[in-house]
Length: 170
Image (cartoon, rainbow, N blue to C red; front, side, top):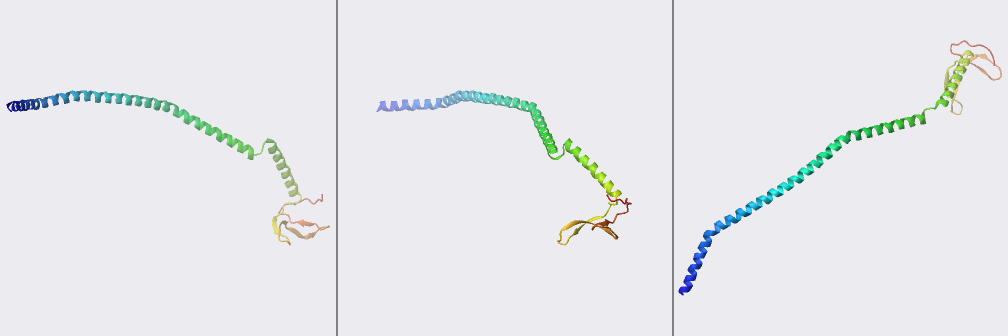
């Protein structure tokens, strides 16, 4: 039994010795790991910062490129819109406005009509016109006539409005 007690005492001494060395061993191990972990963390942060810097530089380059191209794009779109607008206006004008030949014909018609009006006025054709219903209730053009004067073959004399007319039958 004495051997057993000696072994037990030796085990207790070894246990106590290990207990005394254990905090130092733990501290050494933690310090070793902490330095390694700090280096790994710093390396990871540096890698992430390098990636973020590269991304920011690419974004800045894209922004500068778009800032240079943006006004040109706006100008191009504006000029295209103006061009299409002008083309639409010209097309609409050509569609609805008369061309030079038709304008010439219309001017000739105006001159002819003005001459006809002058001739009618000289012949007493300046009269008050109105719309009057006939027997079938349709609106027709009517004119005042001078009932004091009779004329032959069913004709009547138009009551002229203050103009002198030349009496000639043509």
